[in-house]
Length: 325
Picture 1 (cartoon, rainbow, N blue to C red):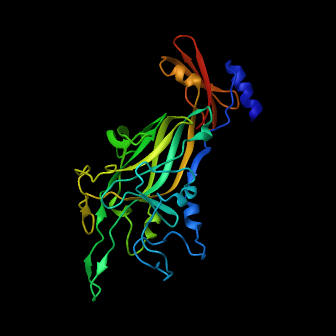
Picture 2: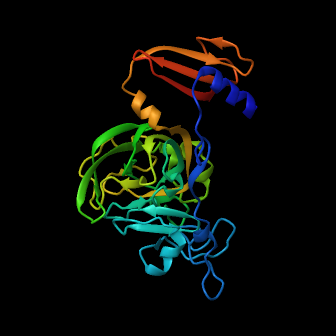
Picture 3: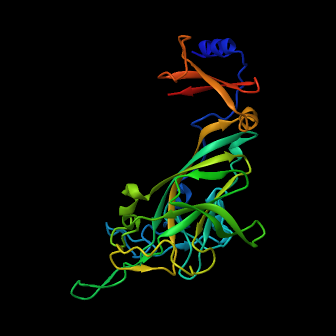
């Protein structure tokens, strides 16, 4: 097939170039295995599996509540991830941004796997809203708790690139911090958490199986300098107003002054490589496009399967690319 493709490219009159990174390659992946497996000198898990109680559903005892990850001994477990607020916490195998009175953040390492290339990316992860612990009276009747935190947070791209799709809506004034810790506003994606995508205090692990916790965002023009930040609303401060409106379907109400979000299973995949030719051609007017299949047939519409696409511009220049339909 490679020989056929090279022949088709030659037939269309343009030589192909190869990149070390290709569509479908994973350039960043994190499921916090180190936080799941970490044990102390006595062989006990360092991080809790259940953030509210001292035992899981099977009665296995764990240290309750989240652990503050700002302590230096935990930094090697983060695989280059960090926080500009220090309000970053962990349970066993997943992390949480923010605490009761302050918004936090989670910042990825730079996407150095891209090397010298520029790429359009797909970001997939799970984001779960936080819920206060439920309390019952002696008869087992609900007493208090189970209140949902504020149901929105932000995803921001730092360095090269921008989010182009997948957001509940885009925001131009997201409060975050620059590398020196100075308050700075960024453009990014606002993500709203569905009512059923909050942790159930009675079954901490239940939410991870919920499809509504899964988020997919598209990022255009990323490079090795690109970083991705998950930011609470609002960073370092209690939210001053509700945007969106408070969720009327929260079973025990919503606390708009708290924005804790649990994050896991983060993966960044190359969606499409961007070449220098793409950048030059972006401002050109297209005259016509020709599609060619592996049998050498040409058409104005793409064929099923592999296509060599030749774009002719009004200035006489051409561009050739391979696509799969």
